[in-house]
Length: 223
Image 1 (spheres, rainbow, N blue to C red):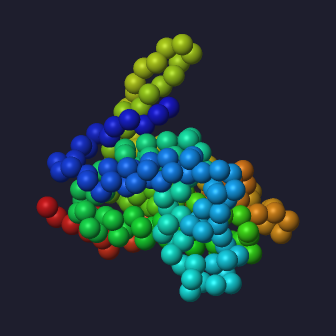
Image 2 (cartoon, rainbow, N blue to C red):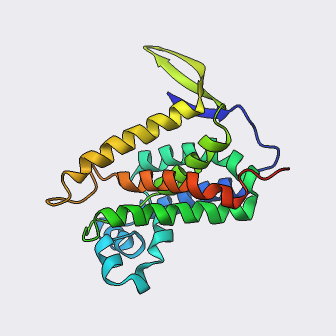
């Protein structure tokens, strides 16, 4: 299944959501033009490296924000941007452009700190918009709990569309990441806290913080 469009279209153009998507794409296009060595250096400079953040927070804190615009591959980028496109527009409309931007970046930074807290000595770069987008999903699920998502359903060789409650799609996202995050704890003492290159605890932290702080950014403000 693939989320396409929600049942509550915005009344204003979500400029920031489109801008964030565009910026992520531009940065990724830059990444794929780098050599392997250049890309590794790029990630070391702009992604969150937990060990570096632990040892030198004063000079590394900016990576909590720059890492949100880095991606490790096409699927990583596309899946994140689809969820941002589907769910971000409504949250931007409710909060307003400026508050939405601060909310988005704050969720991403708090998500990165959640991952850092689990493995402060990890040397593997943590990157991606997933934590910030998880925050958007957290806000969405408490603001639009009854919203329906028009979703592609693949039935063998046939493709159709069905409407699925947004809370189910978001719930699957959360449950998958909670389980994966708990399983990853078993390997913390011997490995990186990331399993399969996915920062599960950043997703969990982003979602939780999104639910907690979104009301402070005008999520329930009256029109």
